[in-house]
Length: 186
Ligand code: AMP
Image (cartoon, rainbow, N blue to C red; front, top):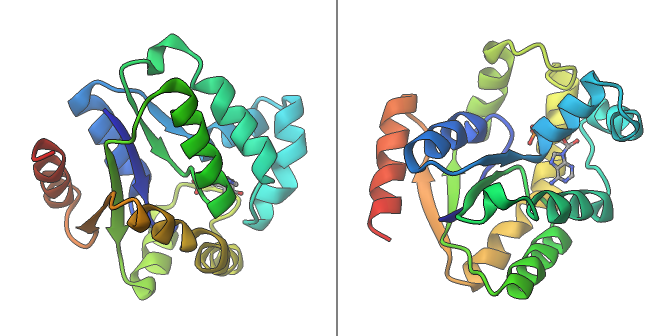
């Protein structure tokens, strides 16, 4: 199964993607995790993107698309995967469509986690992951970037009739149950 999990920062994408990955035995591909690990290991990619992540801005599309395209060549993704944090702009979504097309594959589900904006800031501040982009100022920027650059991705997938809207307010378990029902009915 090929799944995208989508939503604003703090919506719980990473948490739910981990649970989906375990339940359906598919790898979890998080672009944010790839960048954070590159920064931690001080690789050339890490040095390139550190200031961008720290500011809560977006890594340029060509860089992210190239990285995802390379990563997806790994055999471990051949039976499916869950994408978390990608695509994050309309050009990324178009590039991902082309990647799927080239392989003759299709997307099985686009899960949109819906959480009111007031709740997002509280959640991010209280999750205490110690991320350098989790300060109130950086969160405000990440939410603005989400509204301007990422929210339009939803329309791209609505046009493909692929969007499954999931109420992202509730306990982790409750939300995961709804996701499972949605995926199992496909
Ligand atoms: P995340 O863990 O998904 O919240 O991503 C953390 C940060 O990594 C974002 O604020 C961006 O700076 C960067 N990032 C992750 N995924 C992407 C993407 N698809 N396009 C551009 N930047 C990204």
